[in-house]
Structure formats: structure tokens, C-alpha cells
Length: 146
Ligand SMILES: [Zn+2]
Ligand SMILES: [Zn+2]
Image (cartoon, rainbow, N blue to C red):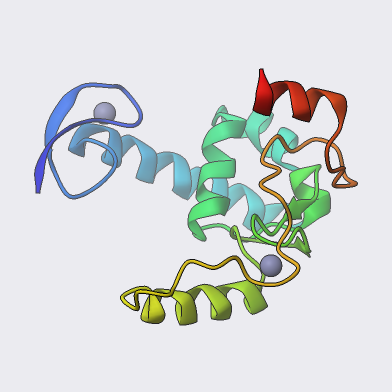
């Protein structure tokens, strides 16, 4: 509980959610609209849903990330990838295997020797975009060393 900025309108509010109560009401209404549209048009793409309901694409993506909406990669118009290992997934941020692994790591986090990178972990490639993870490109080196 604390004072924070609403992730949607930026106003200060006190609460446990990411967004303020007035935005929460609006967002719920938008969510219902999107869900109703998807009920009538199963398989509609995010772009189509956004155009028909007036709800921002970014908002729809946020619901998908939060696990409130389940859309296929085709509907999203892009492939979702596990943020840890890069495996294609159809919802959320991590593949089931990584979720399991992350849960295990959390339970070991208190141990002093924790924090070694797991074998075969990809370098922190968070730029996204390129499908093939490339290591040590010239840009990468520039970014790291200046
Ligand atoms: Zn707000
Ligand atoms: Zn994974």
C-alpha cells in the first residue's frame, strides 16, 4: 500500500493496483468490450479488435501479458517469445519450463551461492526484434564498451 502514479493516466493515487480506481473502472469496461468482441469474432486479430472497440493495441497486449486475455500468435500478429529462453509461447512472458525453473530459483534465492547463470542461458538480449539471437554483433560491442 502506498502512493504511486497510475500506470494509465499518471495521476497519484493510493492503492495496491497498478492503476487508479477511476482507470480501473474504465479499463474493466474496455476489457468487457474486447472480450465480448472476441466472443463474437473468435480469431480476430489485435489490430482488428482495437479498430472495432477503440481499445488501444498496447492495452490489449498488456492484458495478454497479465494473462487476462489469451490470444494466439496469429491474433497478436507477432510471435511471443519466452523472455528467458526465447521459446515461442502463446501467452504470458515465460514458457512453462522456465516458469518452473524460475519458481525453483526463487526458492533457492536465499542461498549464498545462488545467482550463477544456468548453463546454456542466452546472453541478455532484450532488444527483441531479430528472431535469431546473435551474440557479439558490432552494435552489441559498442553498447557494452562504449
Ligand atoms: Zn488512472
Ligand atoms: Zn523459456
